[in-house]
Structure formats: structure tokens, C-alpha cells
Image 1 (cartoon, rainbow, N blue to C red):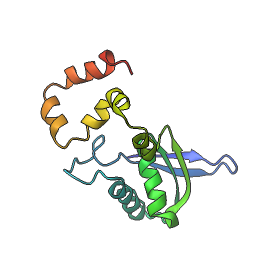
Image 2 (image 1 turned 135 degrees about the horizontal axis):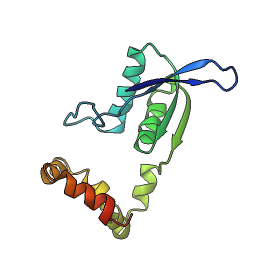
Image 3 (image 1 turned 135 degrees about the vertical axis):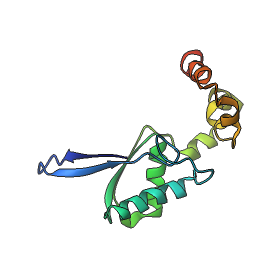
Length: 138
């Protein structure tokens, strides 16, 4: 979690900023389950409660945008405002999914197969990252 502050452009007041890693990201625990957006939104909700916040503006980027959207749907009473950035809704992705799209985004699908990515990549992380960053034409 990255604590910080931002200034309100209207008043100049310092506002708290809390930027937690999502479940399984960064230095968080890596449980075997709970990576659905409902559970991850609940993680954020529980963190807010633990820190004493009942409502807050919420900003999500990329995969965090999906969690922020789920949070706003599951906890509207705790959502003051919502900003989502750099995200195509999952529904739209799967409505357009076909063999060509799947070939171009195979690594997203691959990473969703339970335990397989870890089994194939563990101990070979450098090979994997070199392939992803230097061989793929993304």
C-alpha cells in the first residue's frame, strides 16, 4: 500500500491518498483463490473500513479499473465518485472474442489457467519476460 496526499484544487486542502496493491499483486499475499472482482472489491471495502473511511472517491487504472467498477456496483453507499482509466470492459472483450482476438491476447487467457503459468514459468522468469517484452509484437 502506498499512502500519500493530494491537494484539493478548490481549497488547497490536503486529502489522503491510499493506493493498495490488489490481491496477488506486488508484496501482497498470493492466496490460491479470491481473484474474482467481487472479492477484490470487498478487500478494498474492508481496507476502507479498517482505516476509518465510510465513503471515498475511487480511481482505478487497467485491471484496477475493473475492481473499482465492481466496488461501485457492490458498495454504492461507499462510493463518492468513480474514475476508471485505460480499461475495456470485460463484457466488451468477450463479446468480440474470436480466434483472431484470442491469438493476439493469448497470454491473458494463458494466465487464467489455474497453476499452469506458475508451473511453466517458475525458475524461467527471465526467459518469459524477455519473450513478453522483446519478442511479442504487441
